Length: 119
Image 1 (cartoon, rainbow, N blue to C red):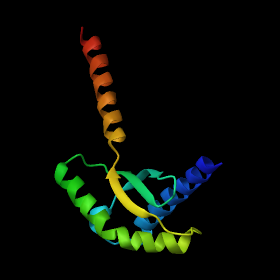
Image 2 (image 1 turned 45 degrees about the vertical axis):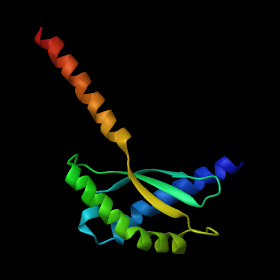
Image 3 (image 1 turned 90 degrees about the vertical axis):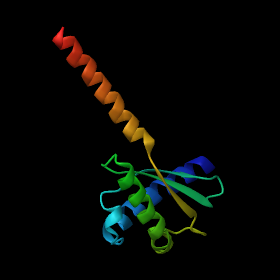
Protein backbone atom coordinates (compact mmCIF):
# COMPACT_ATOMS: atom_id res chain seq x y z
CA UNK A 1 0.00 0.00 0.00
CA UNK A 2 2.76 2.44 0.97
CA UNK A 3 4.81 1.69 -2.18
CA UNK A 4 1.75 2.43 -4.29
CA UNK A 5 1.37 5.84 -2.62
CA UNK A 6 5.06 6.64 -3.06
CA UNK A 7 4.79 5.73 -6.75
CA UNK A 8 1.80 8.04 -7.16
CA UNK A 9 3.59 10.90 -5.42
CA UNK A 10 6.69 10.32 -7.58
CA UNK A 11 4.57 10.48 -10.75
CA UNK A 12 2.83 13.65 -9.57
CA UNK A 13 6.13 15.32 -8.71
CA UNK A 14 7.60 14.33 -12.09
CA UNK A 15 4.61 15.79 -13.94
CA UNK A 16 4.58 18.98 -11.87
CA UNK A 17 8.34 19.61 -12.06
CA UNK A 18 8.25 19.21 -15.86
CA UNK A 19 5.41 21.79 -15.95
CA UNK A 20 7.18 24.17 -13.57
CA UNK A 21 10.42 23.99 -15.58
CA UNK A 22 8.49 24.68 -18.75
CA UNK A 23 6.28 27.52 -17.50
CA UNK A 24 7.76 29.10 -14.38
CA UNK A 25 11.56 28.80 -14.40
CA UNK A 26 13.00 31.57 -16.57
CA UNK A 27 16.64 30.49 -16.26
CA UNK A 28 18.06 29.77 -19.76
CA UNK A 29 20.37 27.14 -18.25
CA UNK A 30 17.41 24.82 -17.67
CA UNK A 31 15.90 25.13 -21.14
CA UNK A 32 15.39 21.72 -22.69
CA UNK A 33 15.55 19.80 -19.41
CA UNK A 34 13.32 16.75 -19.28
CA UNK A 35 12.51 15.10 -15.97
CA UNK A 36 12.92 11.38 -16.58
CA UNK A 37 12.08 10.05 -13.15
CA UNK A 38 11.66 10.72 -9.45
CA UNK A 39 12.80 8.54 -6.58
CA UNK A 40 11.49 9.24 -3.11
CA UNK A 41 12.49 8.00 0.30
CA UNK A 42 9.91 5.90 2.13
CA UNK A 43 9.03 8.78 4.47
CA UNK A 44 8.46 11.14 1.49
CA UNK A 45 10.99 13.61 2.93
CA UNK A 46 13.54 13.44 0.09
CA UNK A 47 12.99 13.38 -3.65
CA UNK A 48 15.77 12.73 -6.14
CA UNK A 49 14.73 14.12 -9.49
CA UNK A 50 16.47 12.61 -12.51
CA UNK A 51 16.73 14.71 -15.65
CA UNK A 52 18.20 14.54 -19.11
CA UNK A 53 19.41 17.19 -21.53
CA UNK A 54 20.24 16.88 -25.20
CA UNK A 55 23.85 18.04 -24.91
CA UNK A 56 26.58 15.69 -23.76
CA UNK A 57 29.14 18.47 -23.22
CA UNK A 58 30.33 18.52 -19.61
CA UNK A 59 30.11 22.33 -19.49
CA UNK A 60 26.42 22.21 -20.52
CA UNK A 61 25.71 19.56 -17.90
CA UNK A 62 27.39 21.71 -15.23
CA UNK A 63 25.46 24.81 -16.30
CA UNK A 64 22.17 22.90 -16.26
CA UNK A 65 22.91 21.44 -12.82
CA UNK A 66 23.74 24.93 -11.51
CA UNK A 67 20.50 26.31 -12.97
CA UNK A 68 18.45 23.50 -11.41
CA UNK A 69 20.18 23.94 -8.05
CA UNK A 70 19.39 27.66 -8.17
CA UNK A 71 15.74 27.00 -9.10
CA UNK A 72 15.18 24.37 -6.39
CA UNK A 73 13.57 26.85 -3.97
CA UNK A 74 11.10 28.10 -6.58
CA UNK A 75 10.31 24.55 -7.67
CA UNK A 76 9.65 23.45 -4.06
CA UNK A 77 7.37 26.46 -3.49
CA UNK A 78 5.41 25.69 -6.65
CA UNK A 79 5.13 22.02 -5.67
CA UNK A 80 3.81 23.08 -2.27
CA UNK A 81 1.06 25.09 -3.96
CA UNK A 82 0.19 22.46 -6.56
CA UNK A 83 0.36 19.22 -4.55
CA UNK A 84 -1.57 18.19 -1.49
CA UNK A 85 1.36 16.93 0.53
CA UNK A 86 1.75 17.31 4.28
CA UNK A 87 5.35 18.40 3.77
CA UNK A 88 7.05 19.20 0.48
CA UNK A 89 10.13 16.96 0.19
CA UNK A 90 13.68 18.21 -0.09
CA UNK A 91 14.67 18.12 -3.76
CA UNK A 92 17.91 16.95 -5.29
CA UNK A 93 18.54 17.01 -9.03
CA UNK A 94 20.74 14.38 -10.68
CA UNK A 95 21.49 13.79 -14.33
CA UNK A 96 19.91 10.58 -15.59
CA UNK A 97 22.78 8.48 -16.92
CA UNK A 98 20.54 5.75 -18.34
CA UNK A 99 19.52 7.92 -21.32
CA UNK A 100 23.15 8.48 -22.29
CA UNK A 101 23.90 4.78 -21.73
CA UNK A 102 20.99 3.79 -24.02
CA UNK A 103 22.24 6.13 -26.74
CA UNK A 104 25.73 4.63 -26.48
CA UNK A 105 24.30 1.10 -26.88
CA UNK A 106 22.26 2.25 -29.91
CA UNK A 107 25.39 3.69 -31.54
CA UNK A 108 27.34 0.48 -30.91
CA UNK A 109 24.58 -1.65 -32.44
CA UNK A 110 24.36 0.66 -35.46
CA UNK A 111 28.14 0.43 -35.90
CA UNK A 112 27.98 -3.40 -35.74
CA UNK A 113 25.31 -3.45 -38.44
CA UNK A 114 27.38 -1.04 -40.55
CA UNK A 115 30.50 -3.19 -40.14
CA UNK A 116 28.58 -6.32 -41.17
CA UNK A 117 27.14 -4.56 -44.20
CA UNK A 118 30.65 -3.51 -45.26
CA UNK A 119 31.97 -7.10 -45.21
